Length: 75
Image (cartoon, rainbow, N blue to C red; front, side, top):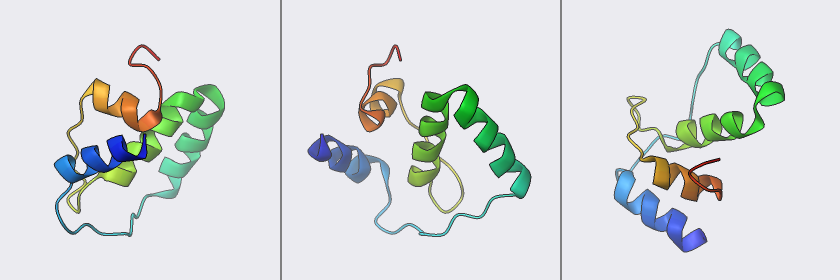
């Protein structure tokens, strides 16, 4: 699975990306509520933020998201 993640990252990410993500407190409050209500959705949100570029952009297929989450597309 690690090789799949590296393959996706190599395809989807620019060579350099920032390591800092700044979000509003209200966003974290909503994220915490989402974690309690829908843990898989919260996991996906973390993965999406992890892979965003410096402009906050991300394009990902459902299949690639499922690979990164180590789950099926249906989940």
